[in-house]
Image 1 (cartoon, one colour):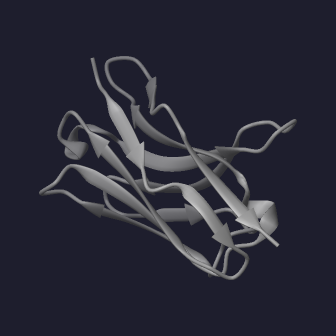
Image 2: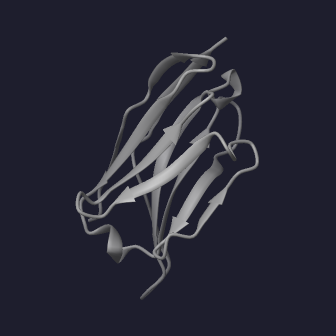
Length: 118
């Protein structure tokens, strides 16, 4: 069973920075894509950014230019560097990994809380 463990959330003032980590229990090469999602209170979970196996990225407009996704394949870990944080970035952030074969399957971490104070 694939396990994804997030860390790095916390409380930060507006304009500050945080780095989230997502450690996978298996080689991240085994996933077709990985990404970060977030869910704010009373809202649906939304995609923040995704990265494919060949490092193609897709950022949500709301975070483009402020957030950066990266991977360390030696550590089987994905990161999300978040800069210029805004109160509207407050949410629980989830790590996601996708496999397409033999059947499409999504794996999720437990989530980490990010709170940005104004």
